[in-house]
Image (cartoon, rainbow, N blue to C red; front, top):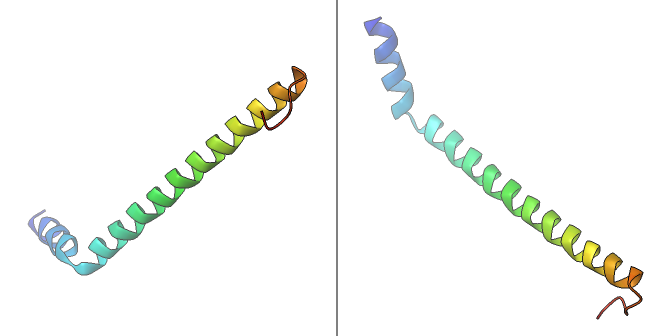
Length: 60
């Protein structure tokens, strides 16, 4: 048990785990931004479709 704990501490202190966590955080940020962009585009297209259906100009 002590050897496993010692190995876990050694791995946690290595730079590899820190780099992996940085990459995962960056991927998460990119995915959040992509999701936000998709949500905004969907909302704008929905407004455009509703305006066209109501007889208004598409850009108004």
